[in-house]
Image 1 (cartoon, rainbow, N blue to C red):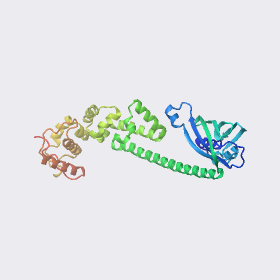
Image 2 (tube, one colour):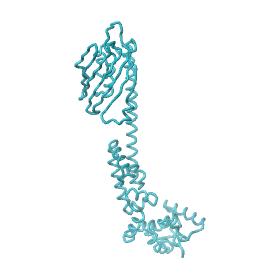
Image 3 (cartoon, one colour):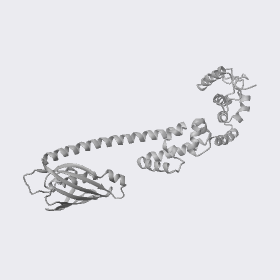
Image 4 (cartoon, rainbow, N blue to C red):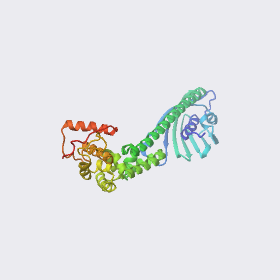
Length: 371
């Protein structure tokens, strides 16, 4: 399994923090180390955030042993290890093309040092770690190594848990967004498209940036929701979709699709009248609906027997119900019903219209139209 690049750097760094000393009595040395990370093209603010970190580390005297016993370095090899009273240098080669070069120089008493670590990685590119160290005193290297191993394992477990949680959140977010985009077309509700609806026809910098980011993170969502936005716009421009959207969702669909809701309604009304799409005419086309409603709906009922001239003909049932709904809500162009009815009449008409929607017998249109 591939090691994390930063973990490898940290392991190599730890291996070099305690240079060889002439005193064999000391098991290890406690060092105060300050590190600063540099990467090509890194913003100045981030460079500052990654620099000036100080920590204390207890390490043994043998650098090769320190590195070989570190679990993070199991896929790496140390070569060209050179040690002199004034310096230590080595080369690290790991799997999948990762490599690094370390060089450290010490003062005469070997109580302080300065060092440079240059690492290369095919995925993360190049980075340089600059370090300074100051020896504080003796320490138990074996105990420190055990504590460090336990700490690393704990951090790994926490990182793995956080990663698993993030992946589950991502999967849940993807499922929810896909359901929302499918719902958008089914219910003709553009808001369910989320960002994909908001940015569908927009080319501004903010939308471009968001679309690029989310496409990289959730390519499946990007593909399907973009397709759903196109499907919604196509459906919205047909009678069935326009009727389903109504005024509230229709105006939102117009914004998503870059259209004018009222202009599209007028265009569809012309075609609906020619095609005898009476339900659409009754709900969306008040000018064409008025003469037809007076002829086929006014003063008529759904409750009288078949053949009674006062009964709404089956052909005009949906039309009359659509006219009643449009009248109760006000004309699609925002105007109220032509002749306002008393409150009790309107309330009764609303109740009857609800019954009609359930298939029950109603008489919602009496008194709605002037005679």
